[in-house]
Image (cartoon, rainbow, N blue to C red; front, side, top):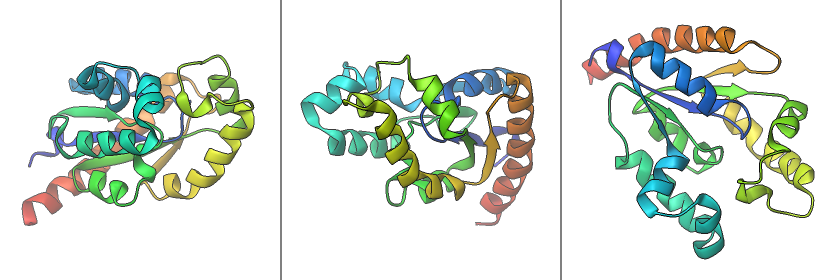
Length: 183
């Protein structure tokens, strides 16, 4: 495998900038961008909120696993992963076996500010969304920090974040390609 073709998986909590950063990184690499949530919505013909309401979160998590296993190209793709995708047992290892994983991270205050105006997040469709963000963040933070390179997105210009992601991807893609060749 050529290092220049290795997929990049952006993981992290909601509101950390995975889709925004992913779009710019994909453009700079000449890769396509695939957003796991958008792809699941397209394949199922319904919104994530509708999937959660009609089929439940466990069914959605199965859809995420299917997406990772066979729902996207194996090369030259930046994948913006839904916030909960990587916290499922075995999913982080599976992503690391398919490409480079970079975690975008932000402080709880930044995440609260970024998600406060968004109503399309089913996990926040509760009486106290701020409390729910804090609970989920506490549950998931340790897993995110195991995901590989962690890049802080708080109060940083997009170009700085993108440059950092590209540096991490180039370094890790070379290692991934070497390991893939020796298998």
